[in-house]
Image 1 (tube, rainbow, N blue to C red):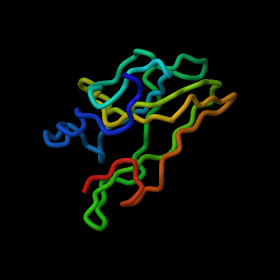
Image 2 (tube, rainbow, N blue to C red):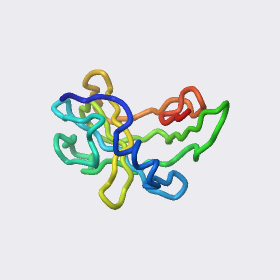
Image 3 (cartoon, rainbow, N blue to C red):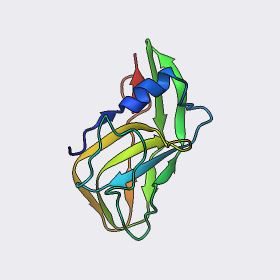
Length: 138
């Protein structure tokens, strides 16, 4: 399996079981190489094929929820602030996960191809609204 973008099965069932709390929980984003095998069955954060680079720490960076759970036009959504690493690195995708317990996953991001930075690597999230936010449920 390559990197398959989308929400994870752990997230779908975890929502129903009260595992995730976007108001008070801690979330991180980790970067991965093109060799990573990430997708809907990725249940928890993994070190396998995570980016290794000076300026990048295993486990990734903390995410700040930019829009707490909000509803508009029958769509509930959550979004995060952009995150930046001051590092020269190459990544093909990312994994968002909640910190704690088994570090359950939220979603997998596929960048479409290897993305390389020579000094600063930024993951820019889409506009936080009911049609574009990174997490939308209707």
